[in-house]
Length: 427
Ligand code: IMP
Image 1 (cartoon, rainbow, N blue to C red):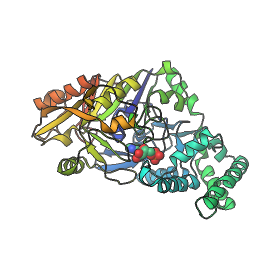
Image 2 (image 1 turned 120 degrees about the vertical axis):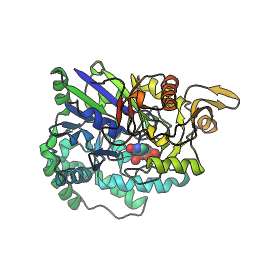
Image 3 (image 1 turned 30 degrees about the vertical axis):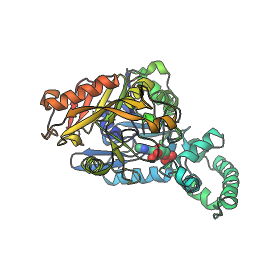
Image 4 (image 1 turned 45 degrees about the horizontal axis):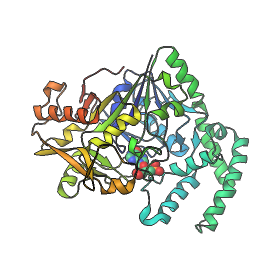
């Protein structure tokens, strides 16, 4: 039995899609356990590029079971769109299973997400406006509608009617918006339910049975540790838990079942949305990394904020997730830079801080303490083992591991499956 949890060790967009795709070759099951279509994974297979928001990238391997656990929030329109576009490209999607307990996103969640961001003005979170936060709010308020309700027209009608009464009152009275029509919404969502029914299952049972049968299960986190609702840069965070502990909750397995936890980190850092970011770069250097790394959001197309590798943040991710290994991605993006800076600590009002602070006031005043590393000019995209890398790249990677406090198991030097250096086999 092997259960491997893969999480983002930074602010999301670390290249988890590529690493999931790489590891999925040896996994029997790939499971997403939190978030929704706020995530965006770009995976390159041969000369084809796939952009997935909900379905785990494991689906690109024929016959692979891909599960959306109870902790995921599902926008059925997006999911159906993704299924259709994969089918058009001859990808077999019959292995998809969706938890009966996963909550459903409705158009009022999307609209309220947008309106709330507009209302917040300068203090907005910078959400993806996909309705993720409002759907999790309804889940916590115990009025959410789950997949099991979506496939039961009677239940759906009762719950939707009750919810629309409340949502329409907010839309009309607070925002001066048009009401959402109940009959129209019921007809649309019943049709989604009919279409998705064949995929709805007790996913916790499937996962536990697979683990008992000695199968390999890969748990794929979305977003990243610093966007975790409890442990991230609150309130500039996602509304779910992208950290490893959430894999148990959002998939329905016990903690003792988890074997290894891998944190994916870029060889530098990026962030989308608002919130403090100590190693953020500006000007030409930021532009250069953004251009080289194609740092634009897969979901929203927003240019990502770019910066140096933040050892304090990744060390914190090692602690919060209990990371056994790092997977370092996009090392090739740094090729050609004369010098590369690596943040080992922060300076706050003259004092040295080694642990990631809870206070955003403190974090926004933290100045990174940098170590300077000489860069390398060589193209490293054809490197297939550690020794193929220039000595400066090897030294830089060794420092990343030492500062973060976890060994590196995988190094990615390009978007293709073959552009991966394996230091330790994970399955
Ligand atoms: P929400 O998840 O759309 O509510 O957005 C909350 C915060 O998480 C915002 O800062 C988003 O930009 C960020 N976020 C959500 N999904 C992702 C992702 O997949 N990658 C990076 N940031 C994300």
